[in-house]
Image 1: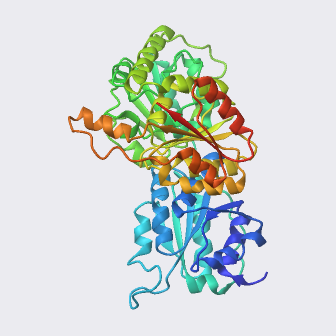
Image 2: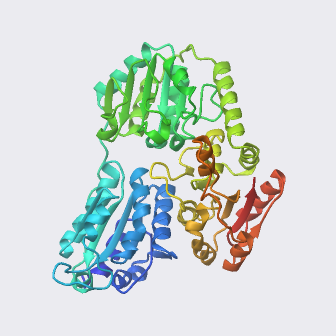
Image 3: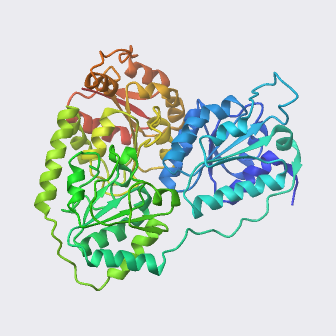
Length: 525
């Protein structure tokens, strides 16, 4: 039992809790956190900006289900990572940000990296933000964060440590606590769901990102009940892509409200039914609805659920599937023909609204391995793809929902590629958003990641231009002079190409997945 500076002890503690990778940037204030990283056997990924470090931690967490950990400095290091923290909060991503802080700010002014209230600033974009005043508190708060990631809705946490405390000798952290579990399924909740389904002729499931871990069970339940389903964009891949009663991620289509109104029972599992899921105020249902969610806040929203079941979505689906075993599959009043007709109409609408993207989505889907993990940015290409591109498995397309930040795709994909070595990962970004974090190309090259970066370059903020036009506003401030993206990528040491046909695009992606470094693939409308 050897005393070390607390900064070093924290790295050893994290290693003992299963953390193998940390993203960040060292600075004079947090340098003590770096004393123990190599000694503990943790890999550190050097970002080019703290925003990139945060998105990398986010991408790593989404790829593994483990918390993404980031080290940042006092003041600007923390404020730079607050955008990724806000995104992680919106999307329920487990992220632990550990920063240094000044020991005293009330009586002294003009200190390096000084903020008026750093802890409170971080608290606006995460689940909680706390300062540890002694080693025991630091260890307790880290264990609290890790426990809450598994026992409650996973959301980012921030721990700050005064610089003198990081430097001072501290005893090792205590042994890890026993793992905590999410609330289990109650007999009452399960019986209610079975009763609703037993009396339904047109049962409809709404599957959200919180149900990703229960995909196999969800598919079994849908088959046994003859149920139709919609998924949120975060829930793509839960229902089987070839399920003839799968409406897909089309909740935002206005006509979906009428389809939902035709159901005689609605079961929404692991979804907030938020604005960014529906793009309307209400789901549109007239039938009784049962909501299943881990978060009481989601269960008490304005969607008028008749029954609430507070538990983990995957556990609920597993229990429901088990309860259906041995029963004859039911024949519902849904038909494959009505689902196929609706999906065909909505696909045509998507193609007409943003021309040229649907064929490229089809081309990419045809050649990508089923285990490919995709990270997209706020770009028209992603908006179309999320609606028309059925995923073969859940949890393999990640997007900045809710908070909706630009600059997410590249650094998040780096985090995902680090988390899944030798497995295919790619990024999709628009020409404007890509420039928020393009400097992280340096990190991807440095790591030698075989990462295709699909750049949708229409030379403008096209979605905003379209919105202005629809609002009868003369488009302005939507065109910016772009650099030579291919030359820029090569300057960083990446490969670069500009395929001209869908077949060329397919070949470029396959070559990029086998390359020795990232490849920027420029696509144009």
